[in-house]
Image (cartoon, rainbow, N blue to C red; front, top):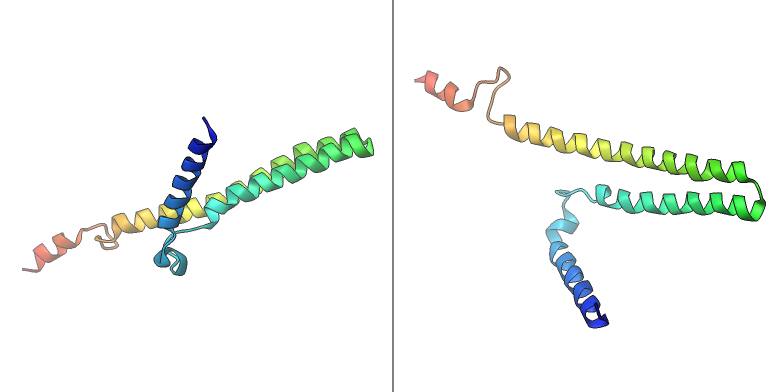
Amino acid sequence: MNNNEIWESIKKALNALANKLDNHYMFYLDEMVTPKLITLFYWILLFAFITKGLGDIFLEGDFWRGLVWVVGGSLASRVACELVVVLFRINENLGEINDKTSGTDSLGNASFEKDYYKH
């Protein structure tokens, strides 16, 4: 792959992103941004913990503390980010349930059944 092909693929990706970011997307809360950003945040945390752990191992000479930073920090950041993602997935699932049940009453009867028996 040469440089021109790389630049063209970057331009296509940016154009697709620019087309998606219209006024409706920016000023209304129809779509969640945080689940997309949480992945970036996770990678930043992972990089920070690994860098801190390797720094402790090689610069400070404390292997065990560095190992705790690498393993413990990586696991803690993963769990914390997964908990945030779980909250957003619960929200999505509740929205789907609401969409599926919007035509029924509390007993599960569809609205067309209620209309049928009124006549």
